[in-house]
Length: 423
Image (cartoon, rainbow, N blue to C red; front, side):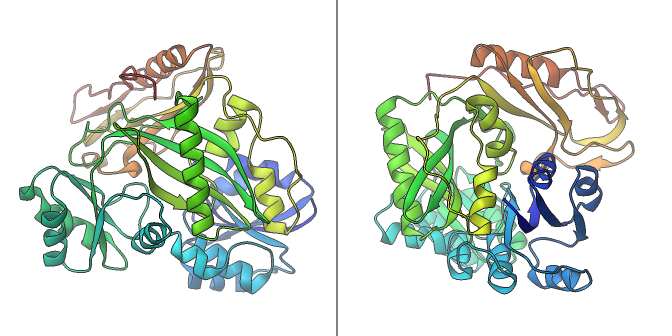
């Protein structure tokens, strides 16, 4: 691969992959709101701008010697509309701006999927507080209220009774740039991350995990999404149904050529429901590190090839089952931070692939109670002979992180052991 690649947006912790791109004989320009992290990771030219603001990105790029651009992509960052617009303006290959918008704005995406016969949660949309409360009443409780245009579970609430609808709708509307919310039925089941590519009609799945929701309701009414577990424990027939549903969704949204990511729920009754579909690779280092660590096959190189307009080589289907690998997070404790210790030294622990600060607390700051995925302070990636052993390693390491608030020891406990039957 050769040429000039514009990386617009870098997901949390995914700066590590910039060096891999840079070493592939590619010239890189990276647009990010965290320029120091990108520069430290070995990126090429670094441009400071908010990657979800197209006008800000355009203005920032106008001030640099950009030259010819051969492709544009994001590294697990939720800004496909910006990437698609830059691709159309500067060069490269990928989905159109219309397709990018349709797979990013939740209510537009759900309508398209439903029209194509893809099973999605029953839903209503609302652009006012009264309509949102009415939508909850129509769907019934429990329900989920979401802003149509945000990620990381920002503004998402679990509505367990009609008494909670008023506050949930108000909170979601307040943070939605578009001023709209989606109200969905709440479904019980297991959830899964699926990722792959779609080029010239060729549909390939490169990664499949079980999302860790063992502590999903730890911070009600918010959802605690605590990482992924590989390999998936789905039974072969259920796994096949999940992959078939993802293919229908990707084709319905016309994600070609594209890398794609789906969040899927398998209900207690075995029904496969599409929750999210995105025209980008997953964040949280999923396809760039977690999947390669488990199966030896990553998505990054092919994502770059698609952006550059190169045909991805036809090879045997990537393995979806590999060695146990998991990612777990530690939520930040609420209150005034009075002490922050160093991360434990794990250099001699072969089970730990990486231990990192997601948001290192600062002494003196006041942290609010957990509300979304933006409120985790540390994470760990572990691997072992069994999932249970990897879980134990993660729990040990995260519980050793010393962050104290409100003048007393308030170490947030590590993740509990995964619950229930195989997922």
